[in-house]
Image (cartoon, rainbow, N blue to C red; front, side):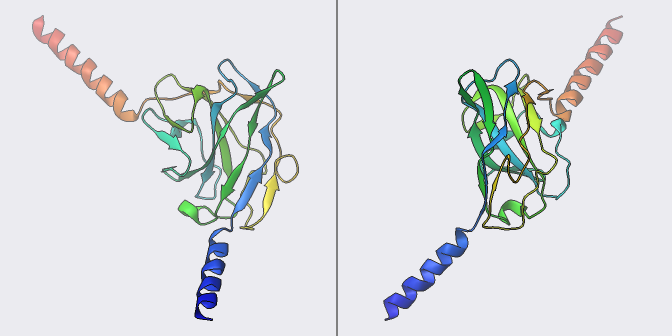
Length: 193
């Protein structure tokens, strides 16, 4: 009898931990831009502040994105491959998000960042990486931590995503280092003359 009680408690604890909000379907129907191929990297990113604030400036050289990672107020909830079939390229929006994970909550806006010329479930951004960043008018997490929400039914599916919208920018410290080198060069030239 004791074994049955312990097993029941463990089973119910596992069921509580398995609750998660599920996103499914195709988030962007057509992807345009030079470097997208089947398998290109795409990440679903949640703004944990609840606002609509993620923009291209958050993607700086050296930032590493992978499923389950965080940067600033953002949580990388999922990784998907860009799909290429029958001459069309699309971005899946599949994710399983346990509300409360890394600060996620109902009402948080989520985004999809899709990288050209990069495949794989993780990326460390380098100068010259180009990417598309998209969000739909109703791309907010629902507060139902066990519901399934599909693009095209519960969330708008974006008709197209331009993959060359943004380029990764250097960290501000890179600009400071460059300015310092220029000033040093100026001082050296002045002292010579």
